[in-house]
Picture 1 (tube, rainbow, N blue to C red):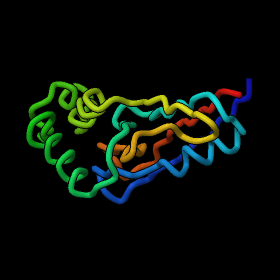
Picture 2: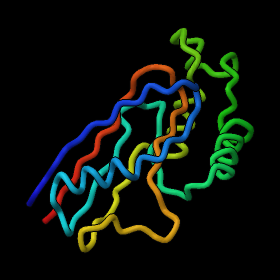
Picture 3: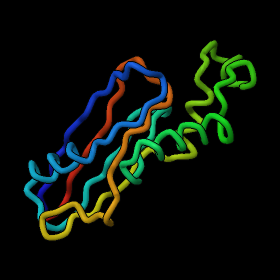
Amino acid sequence: MKTHTSYLTFNTKKRHEIIDITDEVEKCRAAAGIDEGMILVSAMHISASIFVNDHEPGLWKDILDWLEERIAPWSPEEYRHNSGTGEDNAAAHLRSLTIGHEVIVPVTKGKLDFGPWQRVFYGEWDGQRPKRVLLKAMGE
């Protein structure tokens, strides 16, 4: 079995941001030289997410609005985590829990095996500081 591990580091300008990382996932696949297998893509922070969806900025805005308005509003005074730790990012933890922190991307015949509109995204929910993502390719 062939393997390859890569790390990405993000230090976003905004606190909340969505970034397409599909090209980086493909670079990891190519570096591993796998034709059949999978790539684990995992956020290494509990206030960020990895997910698969459509590369469409209107959808990204919808996701950010959905998280803010319905899932975990950025209201630091409303969360016990914030009062217990002195931090203000409880909403980011809940957003990560909702969206998820990792995906497995299948590789078939030397290509990332996606549906027609699928791409891999890094979701930053508490940015403006360095955070890492693990890419681990495995296969033959």
